[in-house]
Length: 72
Image 1 (cartoon, rainbow, N blue to C red):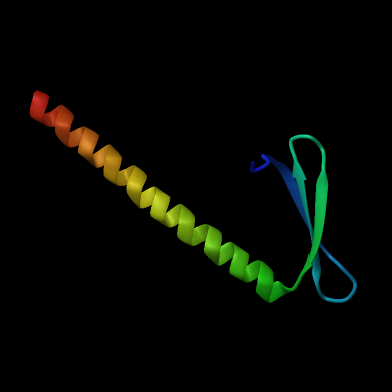
Image 2: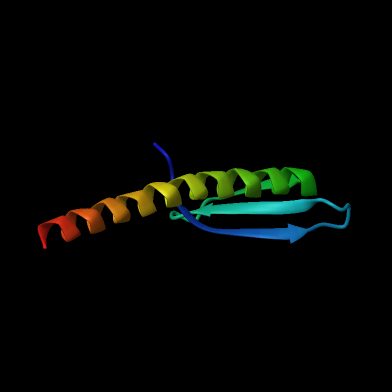
């Protein structure tokens, strides 16, 4: 079963990479080292998913508005 993300921290290290710490709701922390390019890919992937969800959410809102207008 997937764990719930409680918080995350990204800190630059002295080698030009970044340390990414993910903490779940039970306090367990997983730590990764990632390059700038890897973090950039993560950001792009998150934006893609959120953009898709936003389109779906806006589409649902538009459908509800149309239904309300039709009822009036």
